[in-house]
Length: 83
Image 1 (spheres, rainbow, N blue to C red):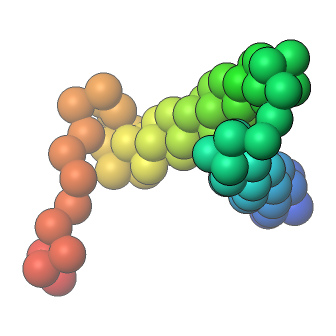
Image 2 (cartoon, rainbow, N blue to C red):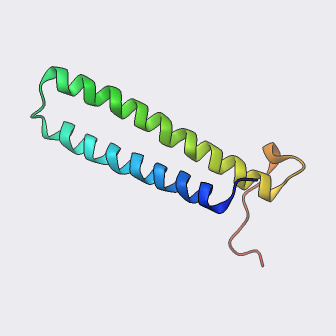
């Protein structure tokens, strides 16, 4: 099982990637980039998106393992109203 400093590092990396992606989108939406810069920004954005999506998929798997260790693929989300 990963230690908490490794978990903290993964969260920090996810947040850094998400922040960079948001800034990249803002720059692209301004419409002032050259075509070459836009293509490079798009490529970087796709890489950041995939990185963030991978991190979210791993987090979902960890949650499913906690909810149902015997069959994580069948884990059902808990209800906030359940004691």
